[in-house]
Length: 173
Picture: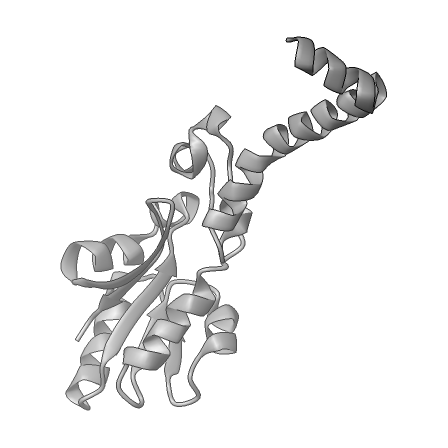
């Protein structure tokens, strides 16, 4: 204790206060910064422990609101889909088209009959068929096409962060 007092006298009370203030700031911001870094490239889905982190927030909010998972999803298709494959999505054709490999065809449909028709036609011609969508509860819970695909076809790829599914890709052929 005596040594601490001597050190404090030597460096001055103001300097000790600055050091303690800096330590408190680091302690306050470090958990959030580490949380953001651990979610890369999905830092926008960060929620703190008050709502249960990303997992807890995913039960209360749309965590994949901005569609950042489209790019890695389309990159997966670019690396895994056969040339000329058909990629179906229930909405947002423009986002899919922006990141697609040039030979992949994009089609938009959220109607089960239309999904089945396009899938049959593509399969008959020997093309692979995929169905891609971001997991946004507000959209997919009431979307007949998404529910149809989820019940009937195998999931072949998903984008996840912090244990939360952000995007799903199904193989339809």
